[in-house]
Structures are given as C-alpha cells and as structure tokens.
Length: 529
Ligand SMILES: [Zn+2]
Image (cartoon, rainbow, N blue to C red; front, side, top):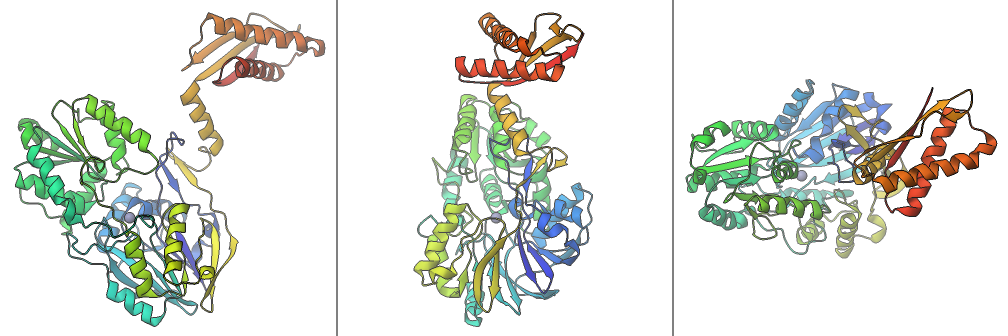
C-alpha cells in the first residue's frame, strides 16, 4: 500500500496482503498498517488498484471497514475480483471502473492509466499528476512481447510521459536480480503440452486463483488432449467464472464440468485445476500431500505446479513434493520442466524502461530489500544520479518538491496480523513466538495444591504434558528441581500461589535448560486446598 499526499488529500495506490510464513502459525493474512491514515480517513480521495493479485487487493476489505465509501478505482477484471471478495465481507463498494488511455481526477490528483502486461490480465500502471510533479508507478509488470491476450505494456505511453518529464518513477523490483528478459508466456506451451501428451492418468494443476493466462494454457491443452476440466477451491471457481464472463478466459463449450461429473470419467480424460484457501497454490498441495484434501493423489497421477515456488519457502515446498511423490504422483514443476514464467520484468526490461522514461528520481517498489537494491543499481547504471535513487522500506516518507525527491521521515508501518476473525491484537509477535515454541517443543503444565494456612503443598506436584514426551526420569528430575527450589525458598516461607507458580516454572525451566536443549512452554498452576 502506497499513500500519496497532496494539498491535505490522500490517494492510496494498492492495498494488499501478505501470506504468513512458517514462523507465523495460525495467521491467515498480514495487512498493511492503517494507523497513519486512520485519523485522516475522510481525506482519502480514492484507492487505485493496479491489478487483481492478492498482494495488491487483499487488504481492501479491511481498508473499507475503516470507511466504506472510499472510491475503489481499477480496471474491469480487477474490480470484478475485488468486488467478489468484498461481497464475502458483506461490503458494497463504491466502484469506479477505468481502462488504459483514460484520465480521471480525484481531489488534487490527476490520474492517467496505462496498460501493463503481467501474470494476471487487465493490469494498469498509473501516472499521477499534481502541482508537485509527475509520478509514474508501474505496479507489477513485465514486457511480454507475445502475451496470450495481445495486450502489450504501453511502452509508447511510458516514452511519452518520459518526454513530458517523469519526476518520480516507481517500478516493480521483484525480478531486478534476474538478468535479461523474462520469457514469454507462449514459451511454456510446449512443456505444458508434453505433460498432457504423456500423463497416463489424472492431471492435477495447482495455480494461483488469479493466474488467468496460465489457466488458459491448461484449458487449451486439455481441449487439445481430450480432457475435461474441473475447478476446485472456492476462489478458483469464483475467479474463473468471473474471468470467463468478462471475456478474459476462453473456455470451449462443455469443456469445464463440475468436479462430481469427473468421477464417471476415465482418469486419462480428467484435469483438475485447484488452489489453496486464500487463492494460493501451496496450501492446497500441502493438504494433498498430507491426504487432507478432497483430491486423493494416487499412483499415476500427474501434479503440475503451474506457478512460482514461493521464494524462501524451499524446504516446505520440497516436503510437499516429496509427499505427493510418495503417493505415486509424478510432480512437474519449474525446477524440472519449463512450466512457469515469471510475471515480473527482469533486469533487461527495467533498464529498457529507465532509458525510455528518463526519470529524475527513482523509488524501487515491490520486493524485498535485496530486490529494491538491485533495481536501484540498474537505475544508477542508466544514469540516474545516485542521490536521486531512494531505496526505502515500509513506513519511510519521501517528499517530492521542485523535482527533487528526499527521505524526510517515517510513519508507523508495523505488519498487522489477521488471526481468524481478529485483526491485530491477539496475533502479536509474542503470541507467534509461543506458537512456534509450542509446535516445536510442546507444553507442560505443573499443577500444585497449596494449604494456605501452613504454606505447604498438600500433595506432590503433578505434570500434564502435551506434545512433549515425559518419561520417569524426566518426572523425577522435574520433581527434584522443584523440591530443591522449595527447600531453598523455605527460608522466606512462601504462602502465596502466584509466587509458587513462578518458582515452579523457573526451577523446571532452569533445570531443563541445563539438562536438555529443548524447552517446552511451561505453565504452573497452584490452587488453594
Ligand atoms: Zn502481481
């Protein structure tokens, strides 16, 4: 989420979510921090969505909970995806559909929209004109010269804006470290075709629920090889229905059937296209690998991962692939076949854009720090002065005054965790650390009954373990560590429950630190007799 501010008014560009990592168990999604705009929510003139990916639209329902009538601006497909999502949250948005080539004003912001090509159709870059200068934000984009929908990134438009004078260029950094040009979507057709030609039984494709182009390829291949297709997963079914209705997905009549209809067909005539609960592919696959999914993988099935492997999660991805293979599946993924191309511009394309746009200032966006830095280096190599290339993390404030961009401060930009139905609050960093410790080492509860008159324990303490193996040696050791601590504390005579609880927890923790490497979450409870 980026907030532009001019003459006291705020314009928001994109409002996405992140998906949790392994260190964030129990977290559904991660939101941007709205605290900076919360006090000024009436000053927001619009939220502009560059495209329909979750990391650009997923936060909109939560933003509109702050104020429901913020105009939501985007292309036809983007707005269709976001309204389906808002419907689930029972929010009726105020939509303003735009398309490439159009100009619209919102408060002091004059916006122009340009076509960009990405892994989802109908993406837009946005040029923002104010009295402070001209900003061009690409959103996610690449420069596929043979896209399935023939909709090219509007390089003539980029060049025209360059001639007008772009004061700040904000461009997609995701693939800035990758040399050359991103391959075209067409290039993976032979690999997908070969999967369909050779698969003996069912083909199970996992993809993001928004990857219309890739799903088009799977549908085309299914049609060529006489397979029927069923969509599995709420967001996949929903998004593909939308994409087909709006003409972004072309499905031959009768090709897509309900998943139940496939049961009566031969396995060699079946393609299943599925996704995870949030529209991401890995969740569904990991449930299949663990046999928790309605699709039961069997001998001879082919699983096609038609998406990127999420970087940084390699271990869990290979665990999933191992699991699927163990059930007898042949798993085809970008590591062993050319079944995926990125949706993001590589270094060659970025350099091309810098030379075309000739920006005065550059602020790389979208990506982790190393991606932003790599993108910044590209800008500098094309001649943008180093001082005018700003690598900033979330929350940093950049001022654009008289054609010069400068870092001037910082606003709160914590990540906000959505945990079940709770936004923020419960899912604190501390709670997450507890969850990780619980899942690694389990929990032990120490139970004592105290006679408050004498200050003595009525019975020996009891240990209740979950996810932690306690044998006799452990119980003896833990009991002894508590007895020792009690003897040492006897001099001060403890008669109060909370103090005893503290003493139990501390003595067992200390003893376990010495004796074992792992420490479960230890809780002590002392009740009065
Ligand atoms: Zn995207």
